[in-house]
Amino acid sequence: MRGEDVTSETGTVMTVRGPVPARELGFVLPHEHIYCKLRHADYRYDVPDQFGDEDLMAEEVSAFAELGGGTIFELSVPDNGRAPERLVALSERTGVHVVMGCGWYRSNYYLPEERIDRRPAGELAEELVREITEGVGDTGIRPGVIGEIGSEKTWVSPAEERVLRAAARAHKATGLAIGALHAVGPVAPEQLTILEEEDADMSRVAVAHCETYPHLRHLLGLLRRGVYLMFDNCGQYRGMGEFEDRILDLIRELIDRGFEDRLMLSHDICKFGQLRVHGGTGFVYLQETFLPALAGKGVPEATIATITRNNPRRWLAGS
Image 1 (tube, rainbow, N blue to C red):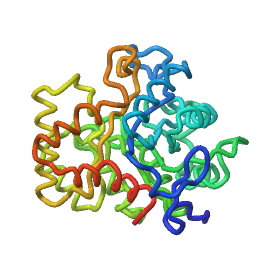
Image 2: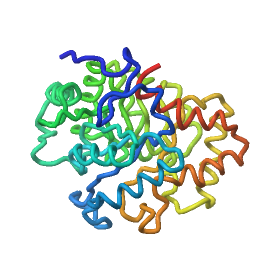
Image 3: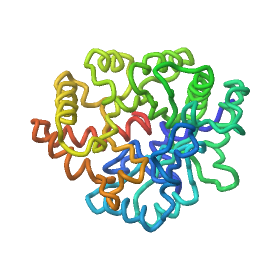
């Protein structure tokens, strides 16, 4: 099961409108959801059938572009609302590059027809490789990253382990990066062990939601395994309060320890209330608020450019 290498040899990234040189990605949001549905999970009662208005989403994404934004990694997958053809239309309308994800999200969202608990990891990997190399269904629209995938709890379920192993095998067969790994709490080391057992290139793996377990020793342990860290809930805590100030200090500490080339930032937009039209911070919070605050902590502009431009490009396209 060997597909073409769609990133590292050519120095390109696969977007929903086709491959583009990695150097053209510009300012990147590496973990967002433009078209997303969470309502079918049995415990979700807080979100409507969201993100159905193309005009609204074009306005939200255009605001990001107007502030210099270049690319959004849209990490919805089939079991939480991925919409390939709508992403193409949105990208054409706004001029923003969109990199689409693939895989299966986490156990409470797996759809019955996906039969994740019955299919071996090898079969799941083959499905991913077909999608990555041939496109989704008959659309020809190809994913550019594997994810968002991960764990529902603070441990990895058997079905989630199959997905992680399938992701690693598809990554090795196609060259696509893996992430964002949905890892709330202390589960990331277990996830990484599974990927290591499959001989994944850990420099092409990104662990998400690092602000949910903001303990320096934990994060340093992840970095020692060669992965990227995503602080990708920026803005979800409604402004620069005490918690977000603590995250800024933690990011500054990691930079001071020499890890600026292993950090990424994003918003993880996935609910109505996060959009600007509904009073949220939208896709612009990093540019308008968080990055100026990070600069206020003494982080140089060159370092901010590394985090928001260079790191997502290197993670996705390889060095």
